[in-house]
Amino acid sequence: MRPSRVAVEITYALTVVLGVAAVVAALVLIRLTPDRRTDFSIFYRSALAWRMGGTMYPADHVNLNPPAVVVAYAPLTYVSTQTAQTIFTLLGVGCVIVSSRWISKAIPRTPSLVLASIVLAVDAGWINLWLQQEGLLLMLIVTAAWIADREHRDLSAGGWAGLAIYAKPFLAVLILYWVWRRRWRRIAATFATGSVLLLVGAALAGPAAYGSWWRSLGLAPAPYAPLNASLLGLWSRTFFGSEFAPALIREPLAVLITAWTVSLVALLWVIVRRIAADRDNVDRTWALVLMGSLLASPLGWIYYLPIVAGPLLGCVGGFISWACVWVSLGILLIFRSEVLVALHTSAMGAIVLGSIHFWVLLLIFIAALMGVPESRNRLGRFADDERTFDAELAEP
Image (cartoon, rainbow, N blue to C red; front, side, top):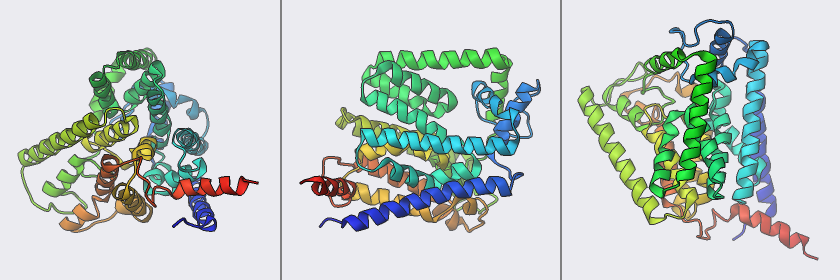
């Protein structure tokens, strides 16, 4: 049974309203709370310090961006912090809109404005606006690399991937995938781009800046932080606890490392087997590799989830796969990070509610793993039916 055209249009309209409301709320927050602590304020101070000849990586605030990325923020330091925040927020929104347009052209399932609104409305996108993080900018870079890869444009795919990996090294697992597929031109382009960025960072900030950046990685937030959706985050909450909740089962570091290692091996085994069984499905490969990177990274922050939007849309299909996606979106729409980061709960609550982002990532991973794009199911046909109605109405 097809959903009515009116139902489709109402759903799309409500989705766009939610997306616009998220952007408006973010801009209002900037005006009403100019002194609110955000991640962008850290990036801004580091870039300003570099421009003024100061210390790029001071010990009082942690900036995990490599030197060339920090320098890229320097133009924003010529305006006030509040104005820079507004520009950065609008830049992130623009990246989502452009990325969604590219995705909709490659995977014509959902109108680009609707897709962009979903990304901005759910918590994984909204937390980028709330914290003014870089996940939305990274979405554009990763989407460009994915599209170039599926279109067999080696230099472009490698170039965009090199930029993404330099900015966020946990994405380096893409190189291992291309090694497995013997995509040497893409690997060469990736290393060439990364090398250029390394040299640019060293030339502008000095070679010693990389030593400071490396030391700053040791000052990163603890893995049990609520926004950490990785496996290590889950095991840290389980065995160590935090200031937010006690440990569910108090165990020494050796037990945590063992559990983490076993889960990483299991994750890798599942990904390799699924990719090997479906070698030609670029969308599934990218979805699993990106999701695996977030789950395996010691700091798999939930605000990086938008980078998976394109590959996930390309490989999702079948009732189980779509059900996992819709449940995940529902959770991300209801549970908001700005509440979770201040939530103190019991040990079990830390595993269930405090690790809600991990469970979302796991559900989306299952959606990519189980997806059968060629299946024609009611959930997967929702957007296709809307286009069918348009074609039918256009007939004379």
